[in-house]
Amino acid sequence: MKPTVTWILIADGNRARVLENTGPGKGLQAVPGLEMAIESMRSGEIMADRAGRSFSSSGNGRSAMEPPTDPVDKREADFAKSLALMLSEKLAKKAFDRLIIAAAPQALGDLRKAISPQVQATVLTEMAKDLTRIPNADVIKHFESVLAV
Image: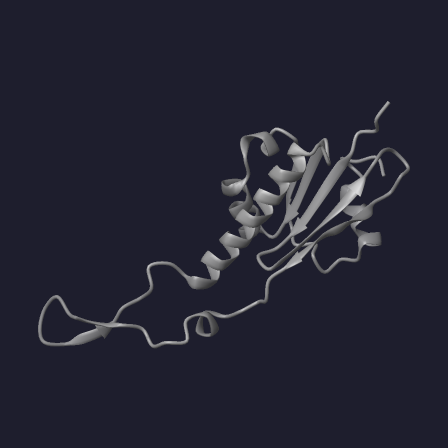
């Protein structure tokens, strides 16, 4: 009988990793090749040009135009979309049966929007907490109530 494979996605807006549990007493192991990161950048580094200028609605003045979206938020949302796509592809290959998501609150919101209904159906639980800087050996403590590790 094939063991139930549970993946734990640990993410924030810039980095993510996947840990795997294959049954009670098996602990957590990092899934090879599923550690992802993008360089952390501030808005000023993403948008190096000065903001555009526009005429005021009244008078002769001009003022700076704000970008329609925060470039950092958009970049992090795009990262979440790439994570969601990866999860869909891995689920299609039957790489995991259940999924636990532990992500920083903003990243968790972005993931919820991006994740497919098929992947959503495998989600066992979600945790709005940034565990990206916690070593793998210490991550187990956060999941003892939901996972027999």
